[in-house]
Length: 297
Image (tube, rainbow, N blue to C red; front, side, top):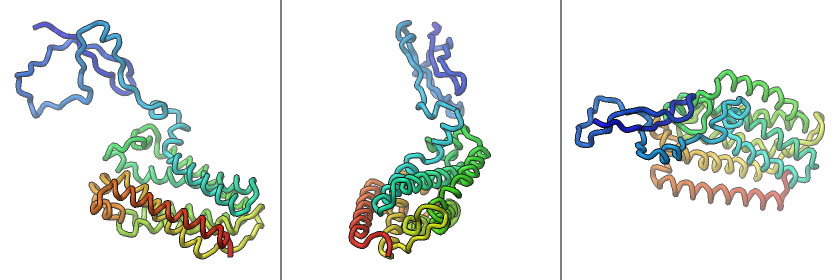
């Protein structure tokens, strides 16, 4: 029987393309159910030009690099961290804080969000490995758990002085919000009260802004009650929005949180649309109340 030359991708770490001489598959022969299938299905090419033109699939730029800082950036939930930091910096500026204070607020929140993202990936590592969740360097083995814990400790040492730069009271409030977020990664996360940490941590953010100033001795005023309530409602909306992307894995693991229960009733697409509208309405109300009443009492 004539042999054909086949091409397949090399295993991880080998790179390139491996050529093998194999017998062509007899399409009429029955398949053995007990015989395991290879992950890489060979691609038959009969022409030399076709073989030269074949290019093995490549990973994304960040995913293909093992440089630790890049992988830490991937594990920090960078998009969410940047959006939250920019939103808080903008809120500080709209509240009348000088540019330097708004910048410190944004940087502080960025570091705090990175800590929350790293901690979340450490907690979720077994689940991410079981479900093959993409974009998770810890689960993919590109980062060591100890490395991420080290990053959390270093970031915490940076976060404390950053937080109290705008006042000890304000700094302690924000550090409390970060602690609540980390606690929410492990406590009551899978059931109907999964929203609690989002509501509490977001409710603390107006106080972080209203009590803030410049210098460790800065003391502000308490925030408007309405702003605090709306911030808590915004946190719940963000929780629903972010939960949509993990509903399948959560359902397989037997979780029963509210976003999942609602998603099972109305579908993930409608849940995403409803959550988006809800979040946008709450943001609009925060802007209206903030303009009308201000941030502080």
